[in-house]
Length: 210
Ligand SMILES: C[S@@+](CC[C@H](N)C(=O)[O-])C[C@H]1O[C@@H](n2cnc3c(N)ncnc32)[C@H](O)[C@@H]1O
Image 1 (cartoon, rainbow, N blue to C red):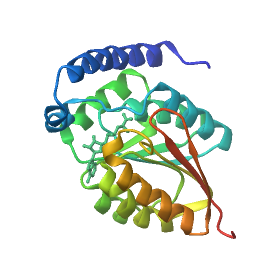
Image 2 (image 1 turned 180 degrees about the horizontal axis):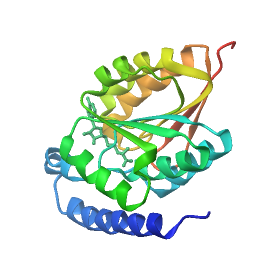
Image 3 (image 1 turned 90 degrees about the horizontal axis):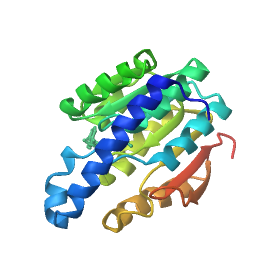
């Protein structure tokens, strides 16, 4: 995979931060880790990121929606693919501090012009979005998967890809992610499969005439 030097440098920074965070997390109880979750990157991880980057490039997706920017790890990989396709990533995040960090890193990677950062409640931002999408990453707090789905579903282009993270891990959120999985599989409009990549990704393709 060909990635330029500025991308690699930013990726190294994220990996270093992630390594430090993993050490810290190990020292915290589950309750404390949960209380402090906004301090952490909580990234999809490299396997999932490479998978999405490759899928976007091969599908030539141009209009990419990310629900849950966090500190921008996944945004970096989505934006790298968007640049190749001359597309754009619209990324949604409620926490302004995280967005400031993500903007800085995407700028360092030379990818700012391929990202439209939108700050606020994802539900409102999806409702207000005028765009339609050919790729969606769902990686927000898990109780929002289903309500987000109901809002972006009418905005999908035919053959759009939808990827939802954390289908297998962590176990505490499986009940919520399963609800999303059941809903998308039962619409009758998607081909959908669970992939054992990263924390488990539900990969779905929208087919209008199905
Ligand atoms: C698991 S993290 C996203 C990780 C990111 N996709 C990555 O791989 O680097 C989920 C993010 O969703 C954000 N979030 C939670 N509720 C939200 C809401 N109602 N609207 C927008 N963002 C929200 C959280 O602040 C958090 O940063």
